View (cartoon, rainbow, N blue to C red):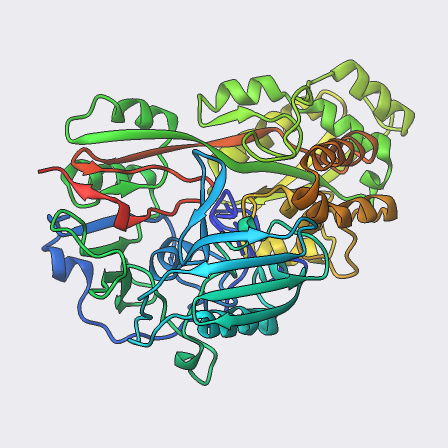
Length: 538
């Protein structure tokens, strides 16, 4: 599953063809492949003496890091490591809201958005020592497309890739698409040495600043990375030459380890601990708006929620303001499906609780205090306190309307398996985009699918499907028209179809060692720390 978002985001989970992440409950969305055993050269404890030392950065994830080593199919938690091992042609800058150079130094597109030409960075080596050139980049993307796993759907617009010369890569598209954003994806956009892929389709031969030092699946000190000495960006003495991932499921334990200096970065604290972090010696805190929101998906195909009036009543029963207040800053009230900062965000769509209207809609459907009791099955991520808070508040409210909410906390895998069988009335999960574009919500979560992957409301609407199909081309050629199409789609999905409620967008609240400099959260890469960008205070 992908950390919540996916990862998942709660995670990933392509997606429609899926394996990240997508969202998903728990921490991450999506599924991965078979992990590859690595030669072990000692655990982080062996290498750091149990303390985060001057050259090692210790990251404290709350679940296992690696589910799939293959950069073509990876769609889960391992983004936090792979984003430091691999690079794409571009990387999204959340401050400027634009793609910026990575393995490509510049790019151009034709007026119709169907031809893109990328100039590649010179003198870049794979970890194998072989040169990264246009032919190698072409092979990597083509292999990812052929594997049809993870988020490979992001390359669907591509008709042909040409290595014009060693430093020039040209894409011809079937339809216009924002290829600069697509190539910045944290999933399926990595450039890797195809010739280093083993018989099982696994490789770790990237161009990034770090390579694998050791991997011990299932252990607390699961993974360590070490500096790739021939990295094209070079190295400075104050940078972290080694990275350790120490799996720490409990927030309070992670907080204690941070205070002791045994870890450098904690993914998330509860509001009380986050408030403490700001005044704790040796600790600094960071808060950033995310692209990760909570979705409450209603079964539009079966059971009592097949009635749109019941779905609308459930939307109106959620105490959005009370939930936002109870989150104490770790979440902000949503407005529509698309978080602020992405094209497609719509102001003025913030939902409101309306219990009298909810009761009337239920009565019209034959349920209510003086009518038949309504029983609904809801699933959500086990261990997610924010989702549990939503479920607790909603269950209490619905009880007043003679509605019993049979809420079941589940591991992401079990919840997702049940969802694909349409085994629930309400499915709670997080979602975040595979690349910094709102298309992911609509293609993956609300486009018709014969076999549900992430369309867990089971919505089937040909008009909505057709509108979703227009989004990539509009985004590439007419952003104003794309904005309008996103607005209309959200009105149809949320208001007319009542397929979903989106109560809040997560706010990332991190804590890290005070001597770490240069840290900046990038919501396009959930829970990723770009270790190369960090330095140690002298």
